[in-house]
Image 1 (cartoon, helix red, strand yellow):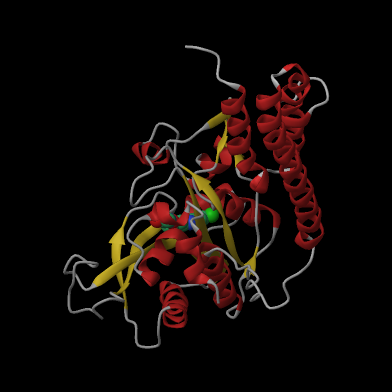
Image 2: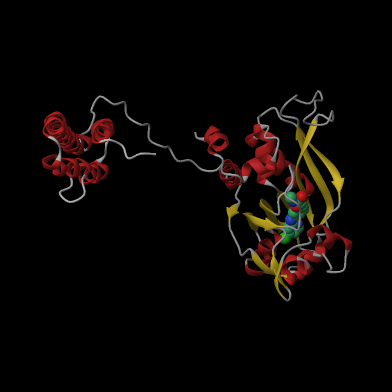
Length: 341
Ligand code: 2NL
């Protein structure tokens, strides 16, 4: 290809000049050097060649080159002024712009449920206490009448931190510690995190919240237990919610029971949430096993009591019809935002 003529080079410069109007500050300096730079500017080079041209050509190209030079300088100056003005204008505030609503913080639905449950039990004399999540085998199992080689321990497979030291599988160890430290009457609720070697699926999590309650005194009967649970259920769910107790086994109670409440979705007539039974399970419970009382240094002939354990994640799911427990762990604001009071 032959070298472009001086005329073509001039017109090339003219079309390149179109970008000046939109260039940012850096690009503007760059363009000024490329086109008008004293040493190697494209237009400067052409202007420098003019004296050596034939008179006719010199006249024609000279006029165009000088015109172009002036146009470029005007364009560069205008863009420079514009950029300077944009800089000052961008720090000004548009007072007509609608305000952005501020974020309202709230407690996680599970935390709300925990607080509500503890507040209800507080009304009937229960103190809220907390304890360590790292526990010993002795407090997590042995003192609760779960021998380490008993099949009941299988359901409590957990994470060991060291030899005989583990992440607690329930909050019961703190209840045993309470029985050892305080003389009856004892009434406590213990909320807190517990751990099990469970998969993360729609109804299980390897770390979950638990609330356990314990009442120990002289003369506490199964009737006291039923009355306390009935009071709680009517307060937490609704005044007309019925409760039912089914016999069940937990090593630390005798007798043991599972507590069901009337299905909150169908009010007991049977639906898919309650699997057509009309009831939803909310907790395990029972009368404290004499072996647990004795193991904590109490005279089981003199003292009796009841205890219960429930999972606030599960309770929150029942109450708000949440289909998957993982929603309660994911911190998705589209989900959590619905629980801002
Ligand atoms: C469940 C079952 C339960 C207890 C927890 C307890 C604690 C002491 C003595 C006796 Cl110190 N019992 N706690 C009793 C029965 C059941 O939890 O399904 N929890 C989610």
